[in-house]
Length: 411
Image (cartoon, rainbow, N blue to C red; front, side, top):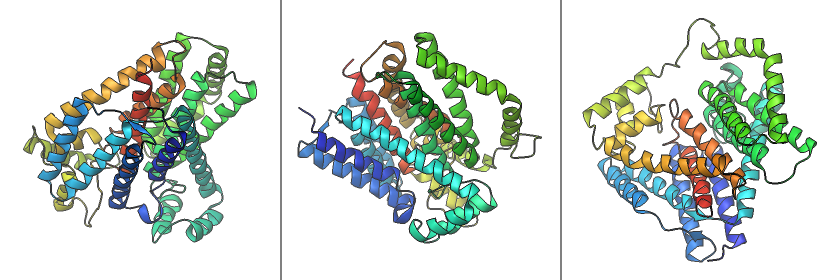
């Protein structure tokens, strides 16, 4: 089937609507999950009208979907919404888009990153203008107050999203995609183009630093070094050598400053001992849930129910999250669900490694590498975040998996 360009663009714009649904009337976890389901339905309708193609869902993914739906019934009715959202994400993962649509998707991801980075800088250096303008034109209800408390009081800058974690998440994704473009773009690029991309990476990294999301900052630092060295060893082109030299010189010049800042970041400003943001009770609750039902878990989305009943906090949370995606999946899905999910995910990542790193001049290599590094970033972030449950983050994970799936079929 020939892929319709217009249908691909409509699907990409639908994907983007999910990315930007964390401010305004869709800011709640339930509203964002419902919007993910709506986007899944819209994409399915496009496929039915033969505007786009959805590849056949394999037996492994089908079995996982069945398991998640049954897990949702174990925690009726809260679990059914998660099961529907997860199903919509899997459907969107199997969408096959025109390559021009992937270029548009990368540009939109990058544009969201630039918008967030600029808004973070405005929030820090021009707070009066930022809070007045965003409250009048952008935020909804009490969102402006939440952003003010996070930025002006806690110094965790959020930009145009109401949580620093989601702002940091999309800054990290934008960093990975631009990094992949810089190292693997098939187009011949000028010196100015390379410098511009390096400046973009610097902008994203600085804005990410200002969110104070330590796990994301360290993940991006580690992955950029790891994948950069791998690409350089594989094929030392002039662009990669120039980028490595520029990064090395910057590291040497700023080493003492960076060491001091990393120490303050890990110790939350005390420079004495590493702080874990008081997440041990959240992890303990997830572990106790897993011990209670280790094989099939307690049902999809059951952690939030247990959290609100535990008394860890004195008020109700619509979305709490264990702040460790792996522990939360063990608590909710059990070993059986985890053993169904992660082999599928890692298999797709290994194919991405093959196309994005190991093959020379493979079709779609820049897209595969960008998606692979973005997924690796999400997997590391899952050690202290909720990317398998937070609607926008889960949706983004599956969109990037879909990119890897697209290019595994043409290699």
